View 1 (cartoon, rainbow, N blue to C red):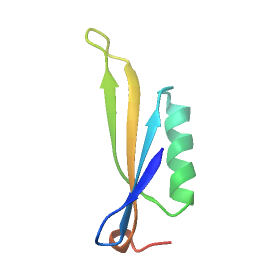
View 2: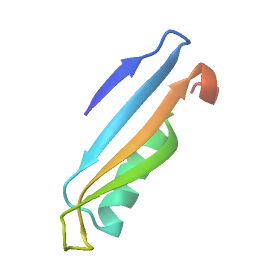
View 3: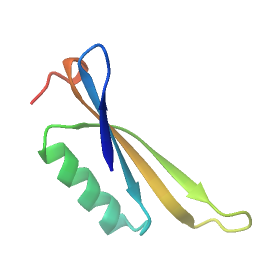
Length: 69
């Protein structure tokens, strides 16, 4: 997991999940929102012919755009 800072003062966080379960997604959302990040989106990666996600990327922001924490 890595964070980058944009010119406008907004910090971005991209969290990668390889164990894509409801509990793992909840844990990741609760972890980063409790640290002041705001949830932006989630993107699932699937394998061809398989409907179950193999990975998920969860995007968060913090800073000027989200009011900071």
